Length: 359
Image 1 (tube, helix red, strand yellow):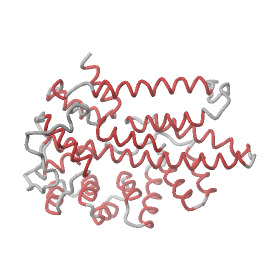
Image 2 (cartoon, one colour; image 1 turned 45 degrees about the horizontal axis):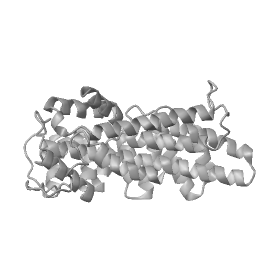
Image 3 (cartoon, one colour; image 1 turned 135 degrees about the horizontal axis):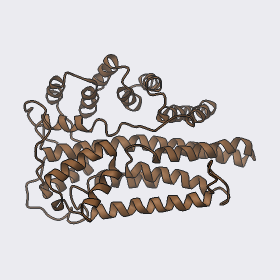
């Protein structure tokens, strides 16, 4: 799991942005161009608007990504945040984004008070609330307003594992078997994040890269927590096996396989979540007899492992192909199309679309 989180750092900064530039070539070469000072506050400018044209300056994009890899997202000043919130009527999305970009928990508390039935708001508080009490209350509310999302059960079980309440953790994971599609909302806020940086005076190129980076960070946060649940479940399974309690160990196999499959089956998959899901599922399958049937169609553990290895190779090949396509090959319209596809279909599908454009 840890090695794939390291891959996630690369994917978040590079693979998610390889369509903007050929990152591996020349990033560390001396530059004569003016360095983009991403941490310098910008004045608030007018109403929030979607950019009509994206400036494709390869050197500026390289510098922006370099700054992101070193310093993370630039914080916005209170004046910039308040201007953004006022322009957008302090809605739920803007309050969540404003809280994250300004590191101001009061904005998140305002969002909870005014939009308590919004699962995106509750998930943000559950993950990043300032107190344990607020995080737990938000998690409970998240389960109420998005009950079919297995992420609810995973987060609740992780909290129980950390408290040593293995019975509650196991109960939550058993319940997750009947849940639906995993949704971490990592791309839901991308347009709003981009708009916040645009309203603060950043260029459209910077704003889009910041939005993509923020989405990748959110996805990495939730994926790492789901991966931690799988690790805890694996430790529990190993303990059962050590104690020769195979009746207790058997359900952990089904749950672990289900966790891995649900991560992979997200509607808007990222490279990181896909790889982590494959890793979780493969680790369990490798512990089974190769001829063990693992699903209702009778597929064996060995057959599924071969299928997963093929999928993993395809993902790695896709990343490599994307890295070989420099920004100069993408027109303004293609760039806008890619950003829209990423938000609506996910990173993997958007990247495949870009590769297909260059066949």
